[in-house]
Amino acid sequence: MKRIFFFIVTNIAILLVLSIFLNMIGFTGILQRNGVDLDYDSLMLFSLVFGMGGSFISLYMSKWMAKSMAGVKVIKTPANEFEKWFFDVVKRQSEQLGLKMPEIGIFNSQQPNAFATGASKNSSLVALSTGLIASMNRNEVEAVIGHEMSHVANGDMVTLSLIQGIINAFVIFFSRVIGHFVDRVILKNDRGYGIGYFFTVIFAQVILGILASTIVCWFSRRREFRADYGGAQLTSKESMISSLRVLDKMSAAKLPDQMLAFGISNKGSEGTLRRLFATHPPISQRIIALEQSDLSEFKNKQTS
Image (cartoon, rainbow, N blue to C red; front, side):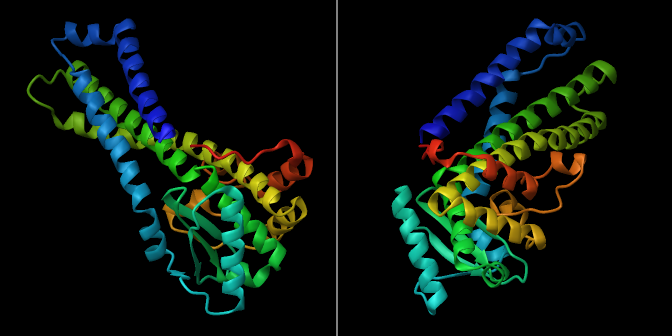
């Protein structure tokens, strides 16, 4: 709850600072000289409600979406030896991390991947693909589970949703400010909003959304390194590195877009432009980071 409060307050504070900044640089003066006024307070509230609202709706629907879109079979009662082992590993790691036992499941895909999702630390889902189970030994699978459990313990689902909400609010706010400026000052329209406003808003929202997504992806890549360290702590550095090497040799299973940031791997992030929009760092970088890390100094902190 403290994280949610902090991000909401930060979001409001930043929007207020932006309002003051726009006044200081004379933007509102330009509008007023052209007989135009813009209700910043209402626009800020609109941006905040829709920006954060959409992100939180997606967060609270994430488990249902994962089960539906990835075809996850939830394991309520283990039906075989592997499912029993999977259940026991997750239960043990949950206790180590001080978490409520998450739902666990398996989804059908020949390629190896895994993900964690959920609205909170104590209402989460951890799922493995059949390809991952078939291609790794138990130590490697356990390290992957540790990686996903670290995502849960670190509150990554909530953190990235909050960041996405803030980004959404900025995009909504600035796209409409730009549209308003073009419509009133450049096109000199003084009767409602003309078609120029709507085209400008759509164009600005697309461009700003693309640029803003690089920020979300950057945060996501940072969380992957942290989850790797957490997985190594819960198992061993060798097991975590070994699992990443297996993934590096194979194509990762395609996950629903909403789950990409929380999968163990999202290959295809080579090249400068692709890396900007990649939710995961290149596996080679993750392996190097683990090899050079001192896990005795790393604490898998649980953020509230």
